[in-house]
Length: 382
Image 1 (tube, one colour):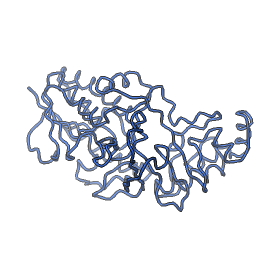
Image 2: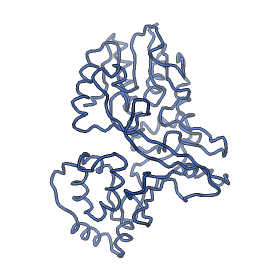
Image 3: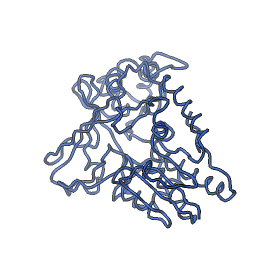
Image 4: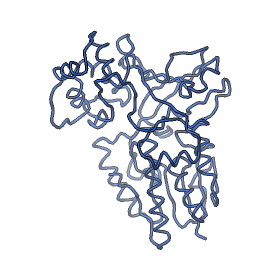
C-alpha cells in the first residue's frame, strides 16, 4: 500500500489526510507543534475555563453549502454573529462603516439615501484605485478614512496605506443601513467545543497516523507523495530568500466580570500601539455568563522574524517576483504538493481553506487511481 505524508495538522492537512485515509491509503500527518489545529487552535484557559483562541480569534463564516455541511460532520456549530466595535478619537463606533457609524461620526440623523449622497460628496472618484488609500478616498472619503483606517492600517501592516493594494479594503463592506454584522455570509458560527476538537474529529480517520511535536525533516522515511502546508520558502530552506509576513504579539490578561462588553474592540488611532483587544468569552455567547472572570488579549502587529509565527502574507510588488521564483522551483520539484495559506502564500479564510482542500482531495484521489502524479499546486498561488 502506498504511504503518503501530510505536513501540517491544520485545516488543509486534516481535510486531505482524511480523504486519503478514508480511501484506504496509509497517511502520516506530522506537525512540529504539540497541538493540532494550526493557527485556529483552541483550548480551555486553565485559570477560568474559558475557551481561548490561542493564535487570535477565528470566526467561521461561509456561503458555501458544501463546506458548511462538511464542518458540521465533525462538530456542533453554535450560532455566532460577529460584530466589531472601534475606538477612534475617544469615541466608540460600530464597524464595518454603516449608517449608524456615519450618523454618529458626523453628528447627523440621515436616512440611507441622504447618507449615500452625503458620502458621495466626500469621496474622490477613481475608476481604478492603485492602492489602499485611493480605494478608501473613493469609497468613504478622507474623514472616515483618517478616523478608522489610516492609523489602524499603518499599525497592522507597518507601512503607509499608499503601498498596500486596494484589494485589502475591498474586503470590507460599506452599508447604508443599520446592519453592523461584520460578515454577510449565509452561514456563521463557532464550533461548540472549539476548533481543535473539530480538527481532531476530522483527523480521526482510518489509516491516519498522527505525529505531533515532530518536524517533517526528521521523519527520514520515503513516501509516495508529500502534501505540504507549511511555509513555501521554508520547504526550500529559504534558498531564494524569505517571503515576508506580518506576525502578531499577544499580551494576555485576566479581569473580573466583563472587561469590554464585546468580542473585538479595534483601536484605530495611530498613537495607540496595539491594534485591538479581544475578549474570548464573547466568542462563545452560549456560555459566557457562566464565568465570573474573563480573559483578554491585546494584539500588536509587527514584521515577522525568522523565529516568529507567520500570520499575514504581505504580497507587495517586491514579494511577487520572489513568489513566482518559488512557484517555479516548486513545480520543478517532484513528489510534493503545496497547499493552504502558508504553502501558497495567500491570505485565506477558513471556509476557503477547507473548500480548496476538499476540491484538491477529489482531484487527488482521481489522479492516484489513474496513476497520475499530483501537481505542485492544486490552486495557482500567483
